[in-house]
Length: 319
Ligand code: FE
Ligand code: FE
Image (cartoon, rainbow, N blue to C red; front, top):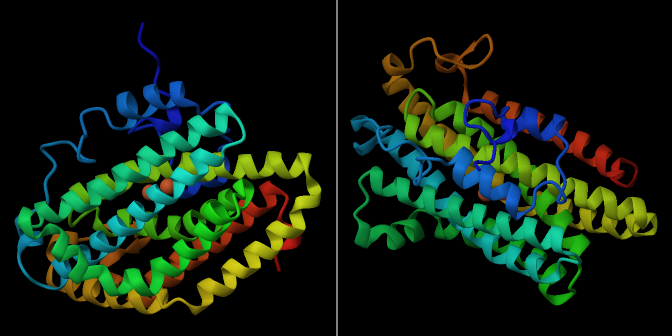
């Protein structure tokens, strides 16, 4: 007997990350291991071991040295480190899960994140990084940003999860402070790379479909917990405030701006390839600026966070 692939995980039927994360309601009870086996390895990822179909490849110009390749390499290196850190941190959520549904769900999320790290990393090989230089290249491209951006976030997550064994706190840090903040950047990335490197756009599409599940299930776990224990809202609110204050100190804008400037330069060089492609309805990508793309992702992030926080019953404890 074969198991049907749920719509929200089908390559062609799944919504975009932003739409899915704002409109779908998925729970740990639904998204258990059995669901994941049918939905992900046999659904979203069928035939796409490296995150895209084997015949979908980066075009030759993406392998040539220049601003476009630099922009993508920096992004892939940084994201692969971020996903690896997430994978390791989620092992503490698996360990601390209070019941079998949440344990199974986070075990699947752990594999999803390990896969994201792997596919981002392997795309660097497609861009021409020699295999024996891969790890050194990642270090060179993203080591500084890891130390300045990812390590402080990781420390907060590990303090909550590993040191305090605080499952709910860990879910909130992961869902709101990490994935909720980063998801719109992933959506932007898929849209930006679609006409330039379809393989990486597909990698993003697959990771985005996973992300819908991470965001919706993570929020539902927090929501259910807070419905049962409304007294925990104050502590979650304090944690969110601490997390936002931490984010405000991280040089993320500077990092993204640096990459967007490189992308802009590459976009100008390859305007003929991009043609009239619209990054969002009514807006040709060749007409956009780094500032406009960053501002749009920021607005997506605000809208999505607001709807997630309301769903969790946390809108009133966050300023
Ligand atoms: Fe991920
Ligand atoms: Fe995720």
